[in-house]
Length: 381
Image (cartoon, rainbow, N blue to C red; front, side, top):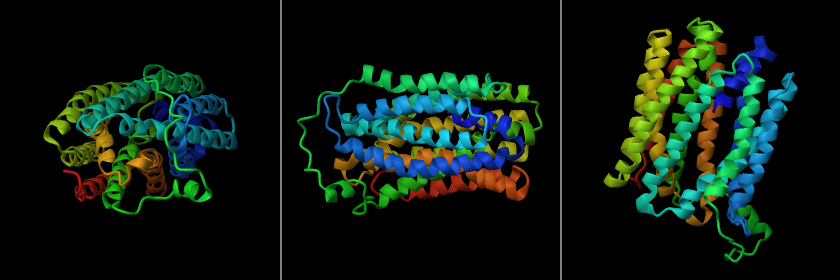
């Protein structure tokens, strides 16, 4: 998250300052298109994989190696073409890690514990995001050095996961004989009994896009909209990372177990979208540094709550448990796609209107759409 939200825009500004808003949008579109395809592909491939190391680990390991290399080279790029090529390779590799990883909860965790485990997963995202944003803010003047550090962390992600959560040999698990028809069927989008699946997909997309439309432009908002110097903007980003971490941890640790206790998912995710939308009003109405700090507090509350319950909700709406990784990969497209397309939406709005005011309005509308869409789910309380 530090690389996507802070260091990538900082590097773009160094290389193409006159094109920075549009170029971040272009990289976002490319990343979203690749995520849409590769999340499904790697999820389906891991569902079919049979090895002595299990179904998921080989893909995660390969993704972490390629992703680390791509991020490092991206940090050394000195042209728009190099930026684009290596960013695309990184996004492909990132999805090779994420798609198999999210299926682990479906593979291992019983229904009555999914809210709690989903909360731990969400808290991990929150901690990683907050710490990496704080770290990234220290490297704004030298984004290449920060990207090298994050490349090492990308490599470690799969190694640590495999070390602490090893999988047993699954070579003897029954698998339908591989044929052309079966292979193509593995990539098919679910249709039967999938109404709530798609509502969860679009509800998550709207929430993530609305949130990251603003957070991924945090550096530019602070310098161009609020008129801070770069050093001042970096300090606010670091402070926001701490505030987001504290609030997200507090609400993340409590929301998942409460969701299990009451047997409800929807009230938590709907409230998340509404809370973040309220936070967007602060910088919209008051273009000050402290308004951005207030926004990050509301984002921490909303994201902490949403991330704690999101994976449990996703698993509850799966139409077919046998294709869990592929279908969870589709749902995760909403997450990665929202993180990438949200800034694209902001880029378009800023380019057309010449400022960030309507960008905040667009983010609020996306969050309202999220609350409405998630509220329409029927099969989960």
